[in-house]
Image: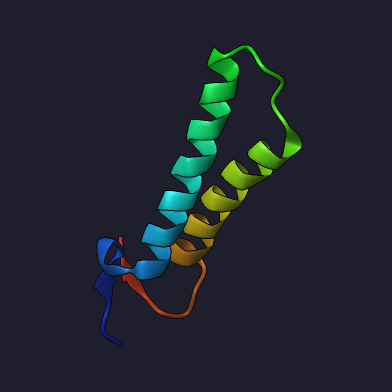
Length: 64
């Protein structure tokens, strides 16, 4: 089965954007000394988890 590099996976890039958006919102709230909401933590966590699932646990191989 042919492998593709991780950076050619659209799902990986979508989840990287999701992770970065969650991180940026979280950092902005921390810098503004506002309360961090569970939704912000969930957004960051889901982005990280989705990247991990796509790269290491799916059937379609990605060259790491």
